[in-house]
Image 1 (cartoon, rainbow, N blue to C red):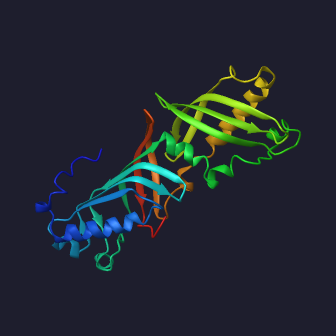
Image 2 (cartoon, rainbow, N blue to C red; image 1 turned 30 degrees about the horizontal axis):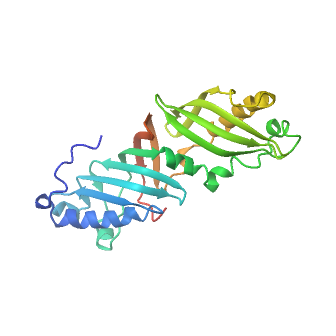
Length: 264
């Protein structure tokens, strides 16, 4: 996906404009993340005189071991643009600013471990704990219901195995187990569909309520993962495709970049 930029790392083909832009862009983008193992930026601007007019030929970023909003781990993230108009004055000040919005081809890779870690994030937990919707409290004698110990295992063909516990707040924990198909809706939402509920390991007296609670959990998840809630300020991700590959979940699409954010 990100081919076609061979030679950008060759010192012999990198003039002062590219070196300066690479340094400024790397520093700017690294600050977008709560943590980063590595962030590499390759800017192509030849000849350097084009930089004075704020014109660069292409821009590519590859990051590994990233953390967004302190809780969401991203194994790898890449994006690449064609020609971009930037504010040359901002570069001289050690910043990177766009003169006009641009789009970038993007790829994001999440690990199975990172996905499971995300279920402990406050933004996620508040949608799973102490739920008082009538359809759930009807099962718990009026008490709030919580979904805890959520764990997923990625499976081939865009499916995943999910196990969890439902806490009815009355001393009863109900085990949940199912496989699901994941997909993309409206280019910005991850959908959870076609649940195959597994009851073999559930005590017989809990099987009916486990089935009902499993369906409720799928509905919650299906309405939870909207990328607009996780966007960096000034950047919107839009997805064309996702696929499971071993213990990785790979998203590909594009980013609409209105401006370079100040921070994560």
